[in-house]
Image 1 (tube, helix red, strand yellow):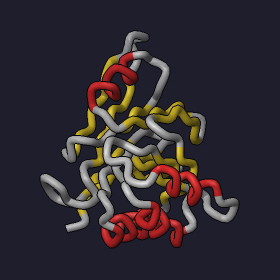
Image 2 (image 1 turned 30 degrees about the vertical axis):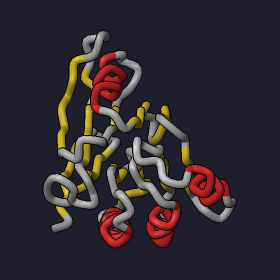
Image 3 (image 1 turned 180 degrees about the vertical axis):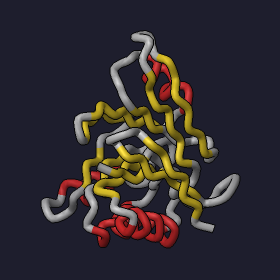
Length: 169
């Protein structure tokens, strides 16, 4: 199973939708959004792909009430978790959070195969040796809106934990 990891869209609907469309074209089966979506109208843009979306809010929360209303509609394949999320996809334990320091701490616990984060708008991927002596992938897709650098997201194959950086610019 391949997933798209996206973060920090900051209401850039065009780039978020473009990233979601590219992810679908490249056989992604789900989108993880690591926060700072901001407006529910931005979240709606990616729904046209038909991919399930797992999202958290980040520090630019926008209209949380409406975001939860959009996510709770049965026809929308959105899971909106709040500050963070622990999910399981394709047999992999995944943690999604917005903040880098929180992400690194969770990666070190040994409970997750993949920990995704955003916030600083800088692409980063690293295999960290956790307290069990095993590897956890710590991944920041950068800002899909292109804040503080090129617009980017990542595709991760959960079978072999390989990562592909995708640039939108």
